[in-house]
Amino acid sequence: MIVERKMRHMNPSIMIIFLIYLLTYVFGAFDLNTDSTDVISCSASLVESIPENLTYPAGSISHPSTYKALSKLIDKATHTIEIASFYWTLRRADIYNDSSAWQGEDIFNKLIIAGRNRSINLRIVQNIENKRLPNKDTRILAKEAFAKVRSLNVAKFLGSGILHTKMWLIDRTHFYVGSANLDWRSLTQVKEMGAVIYNCPALANDMGKLFDIYWYMAAADSIPKPWPKQYDTQINSKTPMELSLNDNKYDVYISSSPPPFCTASRTIDIDAIVKIINSAKKFVYIAVMDYSTAVEFSYPHIYWPVIDDALRNVSFTKGIKIRLLGSAWAHTKPTMFNFLKSLQALNGARKADIQVKMFHVPAFTPDQARIPYARVNHNKYMVTDSTGYIGTSNWSADYFISTAGLGLIFKPSQTQQKKTNMRQQLEDTFLRDWNSKYSKNI
Image (cartoon, rainbow, N blue to C red):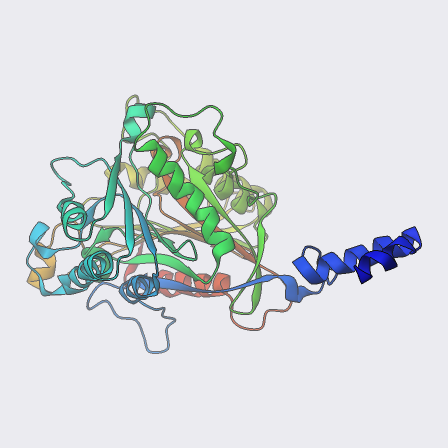
């Protein structure tokens, strides 16, 4: 009442100022301080799977293991664990009886304990199963950990395609995105790269919108046109979120594919990749298992040089250094060498500086050689002099046209870098592999 009487006799201008300060005090609705301390503060780390017996020289850069990161995420959960995955084979019984499967089995058991004993709500969206990938694990989780499981049939909507995403989302506060499948081999027998973000609900909720799209589509009969507003985002390549990660400032956003699964406000994955390539000033380093300039998994096999053209253009016209590290293993498609040799053939023409190598993960024991679909560099990332990109997709047309996948894009500020930033760490990781004894010229 006293405040009300005073306001009646106030000058209108003074009254407006008084109201602003009152609202600021009571609701925190206005932030009159534009200092850098207003940037949302989170923590983050690159995480990596290094196959058993694969070693680097002393002093080489290293990161926390994928296994430890996923274990930590499960332990942090207080109410919800949401996972989007291609397939599930965390138990050795599904693949091959090898002692290195213990890490995958431990993650599997932690999920059962989380759902059954800790009352954590488990929600899983997986690619629709088939005879080769029957997803026995999720049936066990549904029964023993009360997990809610949905299977997404991308081909039902697009004629072809799969859910290839690898996402963990915890309490809509922490998340993992990267190349590691829900497979014990992805923890101990396959080389993987990912990122984990902690205590970042603003960005995790945006990731949650993508999970919600998968969850919806797994039960839908058609793709919404347009998508309801609840799936919209304000975080994209034009308006990235400004974050402080480990005391360094970044512009961050999440890209997605395929385009029909994206709202109009979401940056499409292939658009993000091309933009990052085009914005490079000095170099583009790429580590990806498969590289192709065509549609590979559906007919007809259409030529699709979107990424290839971008790489050729920036190198030929601006002299950008291109280094591409593919993967050589038993299942490398022969045509991949044609595409890569064609790209490298431009090297030396005008300003073009393009080199290609293949990374080989050897089997050091007979048992390792017998593990199916293992001992491979499964990375899917890119780093330039300004930006880091960690994705879930291989680089052929199918993954961007008809496959569900994600990309995490982070661009550190050029000033006030208090510690070695994630982009620099990703660059150092690439150079470690590029210069290692496991990389050979194509």
